[in-house]
Length: 339
Image (cartoon, rainbow, N blue to C red):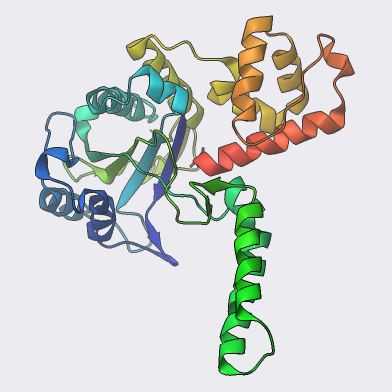
């Protein structure tokens, strides 16, 4: 499960309207029959028109400065294994989203607990994802793409008489490079913007910075995790429990769908790998044999070559482990875990 929370920024400033983001989320519906389209939903409503999402979020910005975000985007990306568990059921994803937003509101640190009926949010399920520039498949194909671009430029120069050469020979060289690229889909080299194969369902959530009454702000990007600060001469509680939110998000999914989460699928394990790799190695090495085998299989799907981990964890070569860590960091970055 990868969850990303971010303010919607345009350059150095924040969006004045959610309209562009809503339009982006509506693109997947283009060309689909009405019964096959995905619609926005909230905690209590389904099939919410895009126009209502825009008007409600844009109007809920009282006293916010230009330097402050008007809304936040939460992207929830279940893994292939998690999606398989729920059989890619949109209704199951809706149910999970509604439970997730209860966890979101309870993660704010306030004198009086925040509840889900105090926030204004709209969510939408998407079923397609595209490769981004920093992902392993795109990065490792980049040298081939660069050489192909040069050859394509050479063809144009030959056609204009600026360069001597055989166009058919250059075209054959391009085709060979396309075949040699390490990552392909249906014979086509993977590049940024190409649609991913398989089950790619994920959830986009737009949540207003202000509460439903438009009277106070709720920032999941607060630099305060849980603290008391002085405002207008009074001490007030503020902050957002980020780790708690991520951990409970997994727990809610597991409880809802009776999902048996492997150690390496947990937010805690991913965070441990980045912050304390030696501890991660120890915990991984101590897993029961069957769980360890599944853990290695899941890690290999991040794009790494993961060697077998010996029973005696002390014997594990540090060089090999660092490769494991770098692979997990790429997986975390790809899923944008964090705020």
